[in-house]
Amino acid sequence: MSHRKKINPVDRSSVPSVKAIIKPVYPRRPSLRDVRLTAMLLSGFLALLSAGKPNSAAAQQAPAPAATGVISTEATSETLAEEVRPYELLQSRFTRRTSVPPTQVGAVAFQVNAVADLGFNDNLFGQDTNVKSAFFADYGAHLDGDYHYDGFRAHLALGGQERHYFTVTNEDYWQATSRLELSEQFSHDFGVFLDGGLERLAVPRTDPNEINGFKPATYLLYDAETGTQIGDGAHNLLTVTAGYNQSIYDQSFGSQGLIITNDRDRREFFGDVRFDHTFFGQQKVFIEVRPDGRSFGRDIDTSGFKRASNGVRTDAGVQFDINNLFLITLSSGYQVQSYADPRYGQINVPDVNAEVLWSPTNLTQVDVKYVHEYYEDLFIESPGYTHNMTTVTLSHELLRELLLKADVSYDDRQLERSVRHYDILTSEVRADYEIKHGLTVGIDYTNQKLDSNTARTFVDNIVMMTLKKQF
Image 1 (spheres, rainbow, N blue to C red):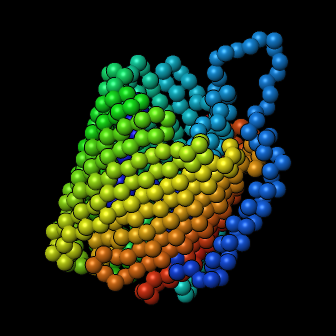
Image 2: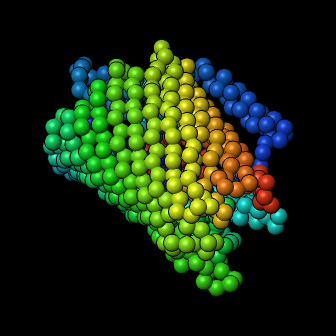
């Protein structure tokens, strides 16, 4: 039984960042030309899949071991890496296969990754006029360490990354992360855990709530949680969690001098109770309740609003598979968030999450996701937005060393207590290639478009090449 860190979509601080490029931006409503362009991209990608079909058998086969006359029944790291796991995402399988075994010293195992990116952004500030483009480079490293002794486990993750623009050097920034996870398994059906982390993050210029300073705004994010798991996970598993997170923004200076940023500082205490019941295989149901209390650095922000709130989110869901082809996950619930400011009042929104993962072969997957929910964010006149987002991802292992992926997402956002509306269309194609074991290269193209009923609309194109080396 392993501890699964919970991510609540309502919680701004727990939403995963979008790779090393930027936070998702907000495209205009797709025109007929945009739809045709997206269709052409997907059609070309499907043609590549067809071209690669004759080699599909080789894509799943590892090099045959040399005959020694001895038959071993023990699983090695190589055989485990080659195994096909039901409903594992092809991107996760590619990462697992191309990873080198960690260095083992007694009960301690560790691994180091070095990453370098070279990219080009044709609309650095996300503007419709006076557009500026720039080449950039990222370089960083990540360390993972594990310690196991009987039922005790400690996992430490450390990482850092710096972005450097070749021409607009005042936009340079760095980010870092550190996280420690501790768990103790007292018996097969009872365990406890304690996690904590500290990150330094940057707000991209394309963020709708950008702090318009001379340099990109940066902030610290603290989080901690503790809890217990009861049950073996084979049939019933109860997870009870209590946690805290806080963001603190650094000082920022603009053309008018010091910019007040502490009204963005945010604190949250939360609880989470989740019960999972597995019938057999992938057939399972769950129910989850997450209460929270949130406050900010100023009781009344610079716009005159009280943003403190208390809320609760409840969800129930089901997961099942059909003939080992479709893995379907459905959940629905209700979100209530009561704000101290009567102009915000109480937000009452039902939430829906649906995902269908189709695996017609071991080499091809189609993943379709839909989400409807309320998301707390910082806008002058609004506490957040309710959105409907659909994402379609197509992945194919053309060769064992080559993974192709294309995805399209459309996000329809309506701000609460406001007439503001955003339409987001994002298209991405990516190829990952294993040069040799432990060394991979990736090429990525992202087209992001924003349309809204405000003055801000823009189109952004980003091309990036990533080189990753594991030690």
